[in-house]
Image (tube, rainbow, N blue to C red; front, top):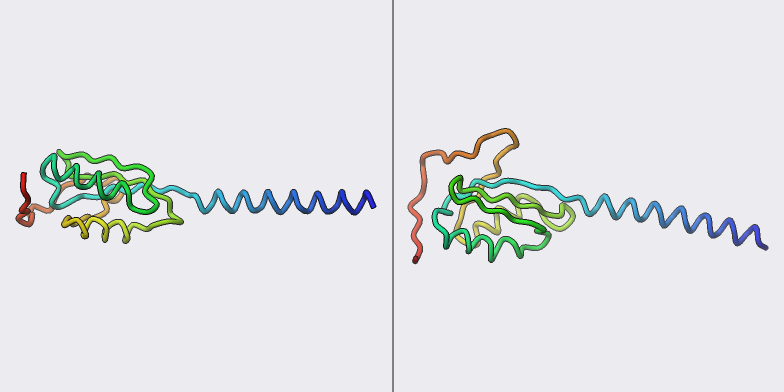
Length: 117
């Protein structure tokens, strides 16, 4: 009887370890930097921080006004890059992911951005 209990306990322990490792994989965080067309003043930065930081899955957000970028860290199991782009669109800003190694520079074609100061 003791042997059966020991075997069951070992099996339970093994399955719990496998589940814990699977959970860690799901909690994988990714960071993407977006070039934000329309983020051209301190009020725009505040708008991004108040809205995008609270999107589902976002764990960190850092805006840089001089380069018009926002670095967003998010849980890959909760959101995607495309959903984040859509969230920027909802607040009236166009976001384009900047690939690692590229320097964020606007294309020179900026849309006229109207907002109240």
